[in-house]
Image 1 (cartoon, rainbow, N blue to C red):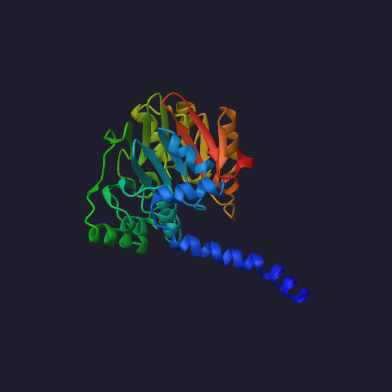
Image 2: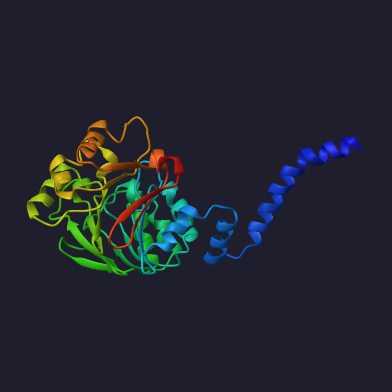
Length: 305
């Protein structure tokens, strides 16, 4: 009898785990059901904050790559999809958010760490419009994305600087590219999103060359949140750009590896203008919320906020 009780205690955690897996597998895929499950498990705080805010900007933790989600008034826009191996994770994140369709999918430029995960996204959701620079690439990631666009019959636009789009009540301003550069980084699609009195500047992988062109154009750049260019490389985020943007928050999507991004020089420049820096490699997924008057930040790892 004692032996049976010992065996029962030993295998009880395993049996409970299997039972939980079975229950989860039987749950319907409705986003509302999953929100209720998150709340019941005490996992809803981070995601529920985005549900309550009229405007939400997510910087997904996809390593040294980019994938950004913006939500406003029931509409959603995805900017980049990370590397090919991150596509499934991006799709799952969107589904957990309760997203059923995408108003826009944006590819800032065709490098693998930005375009690689997009084919899975394009096949997983109805997409109204695909936005990208007018630049192709002789890569498998680019070809796979083009194939997905054709299969799903998604309309494609190559917007010029000065173009404006709308996401719910938010205005999407196309800041760059102002001309076609040879290298993909300096041909990045740069977006400024305005919601009420708040703004978000998304730099793609724009380097100092494209930053100089943007500054010379005289376009409005002030933003509460700066999505730092090129994962915090010191070839981007120059002092002149920061002086024009004057961000309250800086978001850096990166993973600490041999490239050592973000560079200390960039972090010092951000600190010198009083910006609070948040990194996905330290804080996990980042969330910036706006009520149209102010912006506040949350992080996946609560100890980082």
